[in-house]
Image (cartoon, rainbow, N blue to C red; front, top):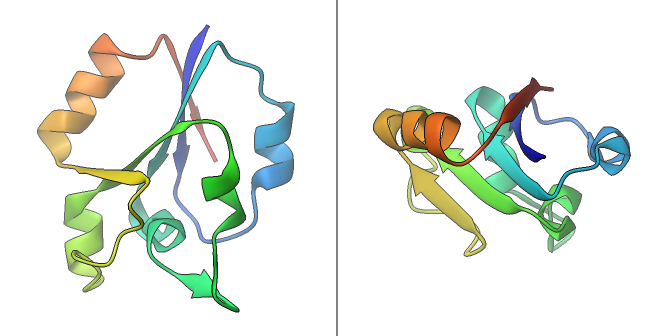
Length: 97
């Protein structure tokens, strides 16, 4: 199964993600979840970025928070059109955390 997980909050959700099993995992940062794609705590990136997954962050949410150019290199920045393409072409199931 190809699973996309929307992360919309900046809280530690690694435990929940560890329980999800998928052939292909995509993590899409939206709303306050985009902080995972940009912020560092004690010099370390978010623990979510250590997962074996494809990472995406919604550009409009990054721009709204003034973080547009500060994303981690492992995160692909996408717009709404790119998000629709992911949902319809890349992933079979969606989960919202």
